[in-house]
Length: 301
Image (cartoon, rainbow, N blue to C red; front, side, top):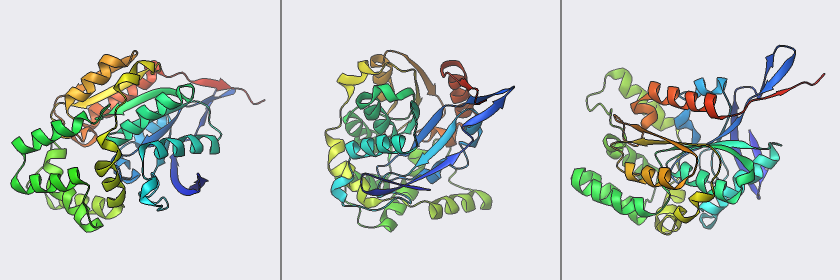
């Protein structure tokens, strides 16, 4: 599905009903915007992994402008602030009041920025392997210099410089860097595992231009640490102990500064906690949603 917001054709997809029968009434589930990483990622990495959560929340998968199935625009509009404003426009387009924001990596940065800009519209934050400032970049550089292969270090330098020149090069980046992104990476995959990896790459439609815009530009100055205290909604913070690109220390900062939060560290995970500890991830989010989110009951009679 598409919505025309801020002069851009933005893709979104919905999983799960918004209202479910409860006796003689209907219970309204929270609506959760699922925000992908990158910049320049897309929503496909979450399918079908988040499907169990659609029993608890109505999931709205979103591709940022220029990414996935959303319309390409001038790279000058591929900014964090614009992503925030596009989310707000989509919320209005869908006629929603308060929303849950689930953001992983760069998606978490968008979620934090939105919650600071529009606190009245956020009921909860689900922050997954993310960071509150540009400090993550220098920490990641140190980690990859110590643990990365020569090839991984060269690929990481392209990322830091924001100098990808094609989709093919970006795909190669993720293939080379996957052992760092996933703690459970199998260097000798079965035929089935290899097939699933290949299919995942073919499904995705990442944007190297959006990624370049972030690392060459606005991510160098991104910093919301001083504003985290203004976030009053319940927040779940999930960190991977072995995360190389948004190191676990970044989540410690979030937990220290956000007033109402629950921090869970996944001990056998890197950046991709959903893949590394899938059952633990689903159970952790499920428990938090059941404890902290309010369900409303409507009677339309």
